[in-house]
Image (cartoon, rainbow, N blue to C red; front, side, top):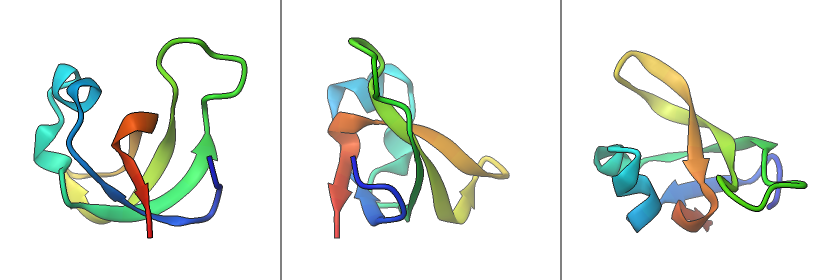
Length: 68
């Protein structure tokens, strides 16, 4: 994963499993890679351009990250 890169969140089964499918299409900045040394729950912390449920910082699964 590329830190400090702008991303777009895309639909994935993992995102739906977390019940965050409404984030599909949101843009943000990948601020922390949380996939190192993990076999499950690979992803990163994304700082969104606009809030979702009054929060800017969200864990997004690796499969839902599309680099711009």
